[in-house]
Length: 393
Image 1 (cartoon, rainbow, N blue to C red):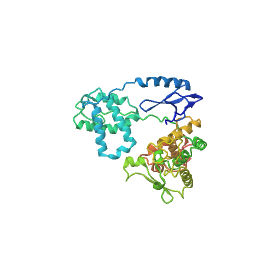
Image 2 (image 1 turned 90 degrees about the horizontal axis):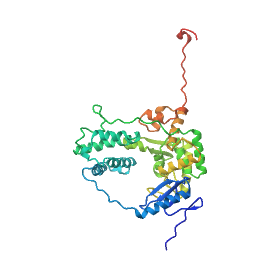
Image 3 (image 1 turned 45 degrees about the vertical axis):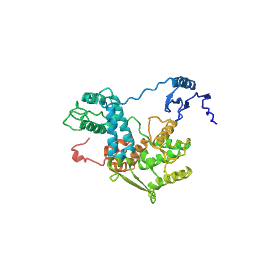
Image 4 (image 1 turned 60 degrees about the horizontal axis):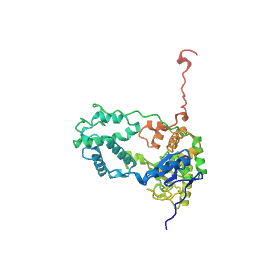
C-alpha cells in the first residue's frame, strides 16, 4: 500500500507538489525539488507567491528536453584536465579525501569550461592573463599553485606551443601573472559580550553542542574542523586532551605537524567543558565524538554516527543563533578563534606564544586574528631626566 503524501503547510497554506519549506527554517525562503532530484532554494514574498513559482516550474517538468552529453576531443582542455587530475591522484592518493583538493578539482573543470571554445594548442599568455585578472583574491589564491602544476604537465606534453613559459611561474626574471592584494577583512570581530550572548542563546535553543564547541574554541583556539573531529577514544588520554592540528599536518606533513596536549587537571574550565560533553555524548546514544547533537532529521551523509556534528552543521548552528540574537556583522564560528587569540594577549601571553598556540607559520598571521581595538597598551617605563633634556617645558 502506497503511503499518502504528507501535507506540507506554511502559515496556514498548503504547499504545492515539489515545494518544501526552507531546510534552515529561514522566513521567506523555500526549497523546490527538481525532476533530477536536486534542490533549488529561492525567496518569495509570501507562501502564495512561492506556490505560484513552484506551479509554473511543475508545468515545465515534462517539457524539458534532455541535451546529449558532449564528449570533449583531444583539442580541448576538457579532454586533458581529467587525465591530469587522475595523474595527481595516482601520485598522491591522500588527495582524494581532502576538501581542498575537491575545491581545486572544481576550479580545474571550471577553467576547462571557460576555454572550451579555444583549442588547447591555441591558448595564449594574454588569454590566460585576462581570465586571471577577472578572478577574486581568494579565487587566485586557490588556483595559483595547482595551475602551475597543470601548465607544467600540459607543456611537458607539448600541448601548448603558444606559451614560451608557464604563466603561473614564480620566477622574477619572467613576466608573470600579478596576484591581487588581499582585501580587508569583511567580517566584524566577535566581542566578549557577543560571545556570551550567543553562548547563552544556544542553550535556550537546545543547541548545547554549539556551546561545547564554542567553549573548546575559546579555550584552545582550535578551528571548527579540529573540534568536530575530536573523539573520546582517540583524543582523550590519561586526563589529557590532545590533538594533531589538521591544517598544520596538511602544510608540514603528519610528522612535523603541531601536536598539542592540554592537561585537564591543570585547566579546570576545559575539564568542565569535557565533562559536559561526555554527559551529552551519553544522552546522544554514546556518540564517539566529543561534540554531539541529536538531529531532528535522521540524515547520515558522510557521518559515522547520527549525532556527529559536521563542520558545516556547526557553522549553521552558529549563524542561526547569532541571527536569533540580532547580532549584525556577519561573524562566523571562526571569529571565536580570533576572540581567543585576543583574550590570550590580554591575559599577558606574548605574540610568539600565541603564534605557537594557534599553529601559525608567521607572527603576522597571528596578529591578523586579533581585534586591534581590544588589545592592551604596553606600559612605557621610559623617563628623560631634565638634565638630559637640557631645558624645562
